[in-house]
Length: 431
Image (tube, rainbow, N blue to C red; front, side):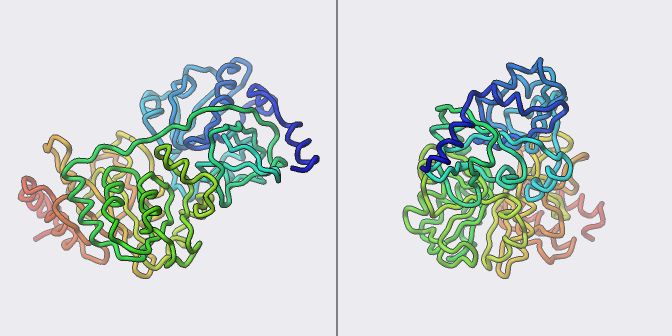
């Protein structure tokens, strides 16, 4: 490390409370997603909230419960761009806000609507050239590097990663240091229905396909069923723990990809410590801003792009409600519509929407004539491709409303098929 770089680093080294010098009245401040939330910096803001004035902290994927999220710190307002268990209840109480968005559009929205004056993030230690890494995330923070100043927390446990997620000491107005474990996110428990659905998807994935896998038990299970495949690639928004085994066993190589050949491309990773160790100092994994990874035009460059995402409810038109049950909001759109569109634009692409045929108590069908009142449509009817339940695969793309209705009823739970057929007739979808 040169003397100039060393001097610049020392000049910016300080305490978490130093961030207060850069927080203006009425400021919109961007906070890193997931594990790039700078814990000690947010602690300092919460502690000093009485000296702040109408400050809004914008963040996707909050992983830690916080008093300010619950509205317990005056002058600080949490604005979520994707609900999680850490802020869902607060949103329903009106203690924080939610901004609807497509993940690929978040950087542009933040630039246009917020005009943010500061980004807060947790990063890896600087290298000898004065570059820090955003570690487990790129998402929207990486897109703002060079445009908005950063105040960062250097976490000794944040893995150094590669891609377009680097920021130089000259991009940083100050930093503090910490030594804090990353939040680990175990996969959800899987049942018999999940295994059946995953098997339907896995058998339709070709050798050489490029994968995007969303959050949920079924997407995780699909990865475990691909051990016999060859030359798979990865272009995803979220890299989970299930990918590691496939890389280490030689199933995922990326040799047939047209973009970033031989590389796993993602905008974030979230999983267990094995995953964080895997991405650390690994040039085979590249983190890019979400307005690149989730751009449907980029996604469509991979000829065998295969997207796998979960929904809560699907209606006869093929509309997928994946973020709310009626007006009960649970998350947000995330990247599902981005990858659904990109996959169907690809030459031989496939986009799978997976869901159980019924609720867990089997009293309600998740294949429905119409979505519940107030439901947010995440993947809309014109781009939906294949819908999968434990009873099979309904191929909807290019099919008529009558064909869609028949195919969806065929994969509904048998208990509800007669009722659904009658409802389809009432709607005029079936004669």
